[in-house]
Length: 313
Image (cartoon, rainbow, N blue to C red; front, side, top):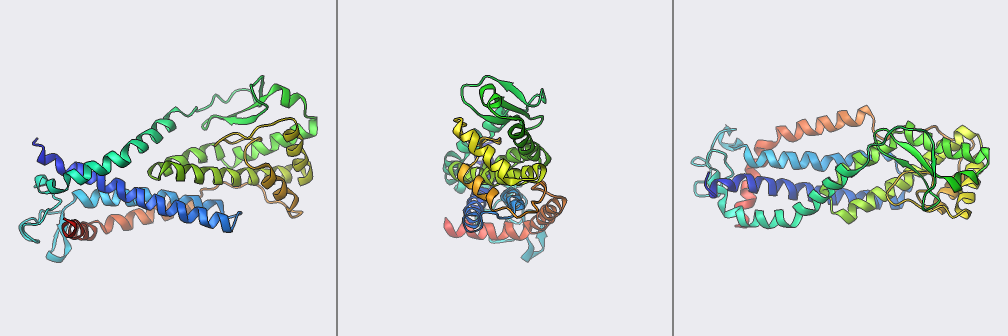
């Protein structure tokens, strides 16, 4: 295969990546703005971060599947029938995309390394062992965190755990069980995977804000289980006085903002709602519909994409 024949796959991947990056960036900025205005934004709003992958897939297919609906040629080479002389994106004549090869390589060099690093970080995340719960061990810091995303284990510093009385320990355990009931350990990995296309700093901000909300929702569920939100709030303050540290981008009793969590508990109504998962079947249906719509629009998107690319050359 000649170098010019490789132009189309390189250009297609670059277009797909930049489309997903733009969509993820815009959605992340918009979501963060909404969270700033409405701290208790419905957590299911994180489902929208699957849409950049739909956009990226649609752009990839639009780049490699030829067609011009205006001339009645769909999934057929139209290089000679539609705007002869243009730089077409056509698998039959992949070399016609060569004028776009250099810009595509620049885009890949700018965007691909960060995406690959994010994927490597995801692959290194511990799955968990599902061992003794809680696992009380001596740790360098007084923390209590969920270890693992598939079979998570609650790992608690021995000094911190022994300093708590039975009621306080029950509050911690109720909080962590709420995380498990909501599938939060798995959800944080899914969210990070959906945000691979976004700029890393922006992705970390989104994950951090979601984690803050997840801790408040687990506190709400713990208050519902214990029957008194002030007990959960007092346990949080007690742990803070014992030197409990916040865990960065992790789930657990010592994660999130202490002030925000305590204030949230003190403001809770008498009837606190039990925990519910963030992602539901209706969201998967909506995602499937958006995917079908984007696939149906591929021929028209291909034609408009060629117009845009040739106008920019």
